[in-house]
Length: 241
Image (tube, rainbow, N blue to C red; front, side):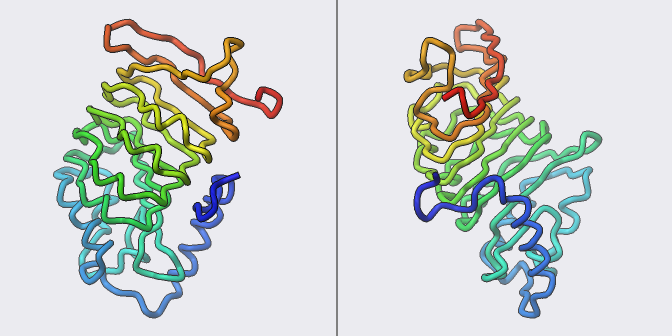
């Protein structure tokens, strides 16, 4: 069960995103992006991308409405200027090049942040992401992201899915990560990380810290000492807890 006040559950996310987009298309009170705080934050994100072969960001124009006209952006239908989802899933044949802008931290209504297959975007995860306490999904995969996993990640009490797989993270795993009460999916595979799951049972089952976990992938993690740990992803059934 998610904590009170959390965002929608992971199982209903896709349906709700489609419903939001349909309602927004019929909103007669749409505003242009340049007059919205969230729109300006996304334009700052775009300004940090020097090359975009996907064409996704070509739809992000300051004279258009970011909620209805921009690819990868979904807004709250009840408050049609606040962004609830940023979904930049780059196709295999395309790429973006640049830096990950701190402006993402201004999207304080964001529930789903999904950015994948952008190996040419190199930077640390912006500390301003700590402002996104409503996040339900945090998926930043196939980047050249280096540095730390945010120590404050434990404050994201609504997080159901976290994947930072296939990056260049080189820190210890924050202990606060193991305290997320809503977590269902966690993947940190193919990074250079250290740390332990202190509550894991010797039988190899998922820690009791995660009452709702269904998938855990810590495979192909290279420790800071240089050794490679090969751990098969856990797929958890109801009987494995």
